[in-house]
Length: 268
Image (cartoon, rainbow, N blue to C red; front, side, top):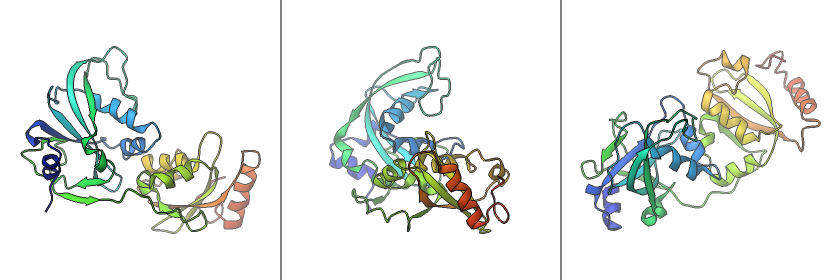
């Protein structure tokens, strides 16, 4: 069994100098991981982890940062040296949740590229103590669960593509880029009852942005779906539409064609 400490040793890093940090979200499911997959996501997550309520990082040491995926995997994000600590200025807010960070500890974290090969690819077994969001590497030789291949498989095309909404933030980066580039009409299917909902991504929202909102809060702001707490949906693309001029007409056509106003989950 290979452990994360074995990898640290192989790169000349003393596990006694490393704290393992597992970012958790307090019920705001998937936001940190989803942010990390955005084009500017690394900088945002790095800014987020610099802010801490307590002095948990040791100046002169390292943190090995991990992010929990929507599937529950503990995925390696990066290695950072702790150079110092200061205090957040008034009205400082973290860039992911927008929480007020005034007066909290603000760490100077310098990125170390020695484990860059494993970023976004290596996952470990954190163990049962999930509430312990940081642990000493030397005392906790975490087993390596998997090291994924770096290349994404080809996107199957919109006609064949479907995904469970909670898995959207964990999609391959190239697949996310495709969904981020288009707008259109999508179909949600309740995986337990088979009931259907037709929606559209328009304006400033892409299909990826719309589905990510569902993945985070379960309803995407829709009043009818908000009442169906705990429902799990499968998402697929019905039609890609260029521009917003006719997208509402196309959306209405699909609602009529699939009968989702009468027999489904659409309320208008």
